[in-house]
Length: 368
Image (cartoon, rainbow, N blue to C red; front, top):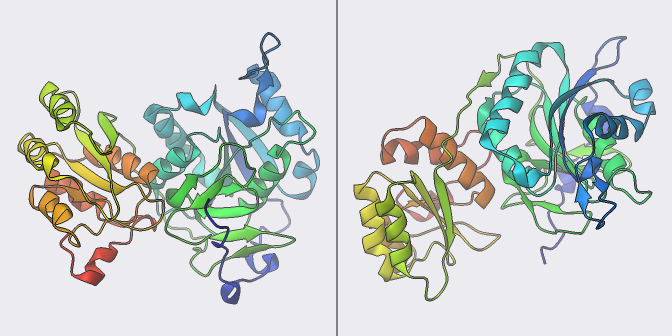
């Protein structure tokens, strides 16, 4: 259970009128990029399972949730991207989303992406690297309950997302159940609760109450050119270590030559059994980065604290510090696409592009 103690520091909150952006006499223009998800799903009449709706009906359902959106908040244009269960999300769709935003960036004041909740945090992390120096809000949202049900959370989340997309803030945000989360810090913590997301190792960027409040870390809109940096190498595997995990399994993957990067979810502050040291060294010899994250939801890898972690570093492991698993995986895929050596990958992984990493090990004299 993650305590809901991640609220924005009250001393730095301002009410929503401080974040309104002056669009003159016209309403702001918001582009909605439709990717499907529970928000627009229907029940399968044969077994009751949720399946994607027909394209036109799904978009019609989305726009019918609150007709007053167009009258009171923004002029909305819907662009169909995909209509999928987000379990079927791919890096190619991340690039497609990035390209669509980049190509229409100057025509709109903000963007909303409707998305399934299962991989939403992967998408919000991935887009944080594809699109950089963003000067407007790009908001990702979805729902736990389909939009046609009376008890749905889709209406509230969609309205909030559109509203945030019109404000005087910039960046990639995940908006869900009143929380505004930095995209590369988001993590899904519940499969059924309506407050399904939390920021990992960070506070909320903002909250939606009877007003909208942001922390002082939220960046302002700007007119600098956006940077479009697409491309992922998905030849990555993720392993969660456990007592008894056979190193031979990892060695076999390395020797097979089908992967370019490995993420190990380790114990505590980045601790790995001595049995894996030779495997880490083998991966390094084949130019395959081994990135070590922690199985703990809170905290960072500080691998110099214990000998088992320090030995892994000495063999060539790269620590993820306080990045979420979703961010670590997508950032590694993004880094591999633009790197030829482990050293280049490590430099990218340890560069803070959007507030996704705090190399806090430096505070303790840790090697990077």
